[in-house]
Length: 150
Ligand code: THU
Image (cartoon, rainbow, N blue to C red; front, side):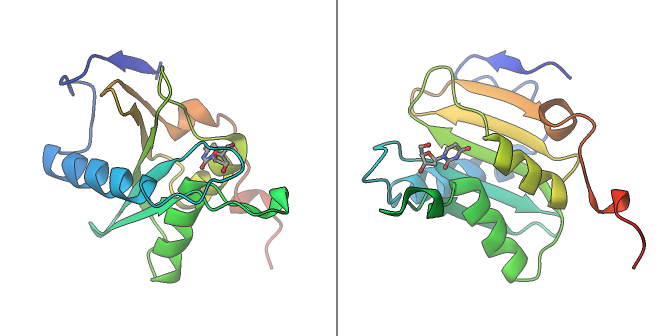
């Protein structure tokens, strides 16, 4: 699947239903407003939809010891997993960049762990949307099935 640029207001290529899309957008935007990003000044919000229909959001959380910070996507996923949700069907990320920023490589690996087929919706404050999916963002991904049986 090729990432698709969608004009603000048009959600034709988006697979997730409109109600969940709205909830994901509100949750991610709200989480972004709580980003702790004093070092990068780059607030990010994310929200994930679980297989059971639950939505978890996250923001990036930075540290004065830079490598210890955590991306918004991973915060959202870790919150979902720690609540018992291990399958993710959709991830929405919101930044203030044009075009909307996509998840970093580390987050792609973590999304793949819990949603190897997940839809990924990248959006920004201007309402631009890029929609893609995990097989596009992380082809030939490394997962648990690669490891020898325990
Ligand atoms: N960041 C995210 O939260 N998600 C990404 O996918 C890319 C980067 C955060 C990490 C850091 O706090 C800031 O953006 C600048 O890299």
